[in-house]
Length: 392
Image 1 (cartoon, rainbow, N blue to C red):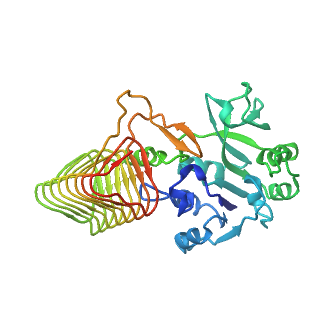
Image 2 (tube, rainbow, N blue to C red):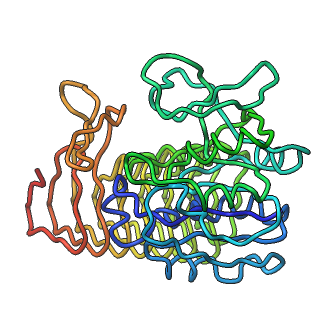
């Protein structure tokens, strides 16, 4: 069986992150989205093709030769539009496992669809079918049709974009006509496929992680951190450090005296946590970060080479690479009216369904001393503040 990973699109809903990297390389817990799925399938297939386009060189550089026992090759998507254009002109005679890079799937669910002697799609029962591509199935779970976002209730089995087909799906993808939207539609290809070939729906047993918006990074980290059942401390913990629950501390990372860590936390290599720092619940700190004296960090994702200076307060936030935060940076993460935080995405406000969110800060930002922020602000690449700035 051959695996095809769809990783070509820019995904503007995740800006500003996707300004500089493609979505498949966004880190969740300790590796990128695409690596999570590759780790779960590479021992089960004999070849992997990754469909690329947007910033394809970064994907190739990241994957490199980490899967030495399985050939990994790349297919550059053309300018043809929409999902099913991604697999057009791929040459194979093997059965194919097709996975969209939008989500991270549990290894057991992926293995099940690979091992079963049939052709399958992964589905999930949903309460709001109008938001999804929905499958019509018969009493034996055979798929009869797929319908895009039905506005009246018909069925409730949502497409999760993981499929096991025979190679004939490639022929169908090559020959379907453009739709009324001038796109090559997945619905058209699947509806043609089920007229000729058997295809069954299989419901996932485990959770899957969907990363649609920036704040999903935090909830996705929480999914993995909640699974920690014991600590894995690989480097230096000084005297009088208090660790409550479980942490992963990678090589060359240091916890200095009087640090207090509560709930499950992940700290990557070369990072230093200075004395009297309080780190708690659902925090991931990546490579070569410095969290200085008397800083509090909660429910945050902090990427490489980021410094947070003394007396700062970082809650419910995502700080990307090479950020420097001066001392005494304070922000608000809660609206006084306690309404959910609404975030501008693609020129409209989207309900995050969270009532606590702080700030997204992208690469190379510099926040000077005694700066302040209102709830949920986005700071784009290479920006800086002057001392005492209020970020509104």
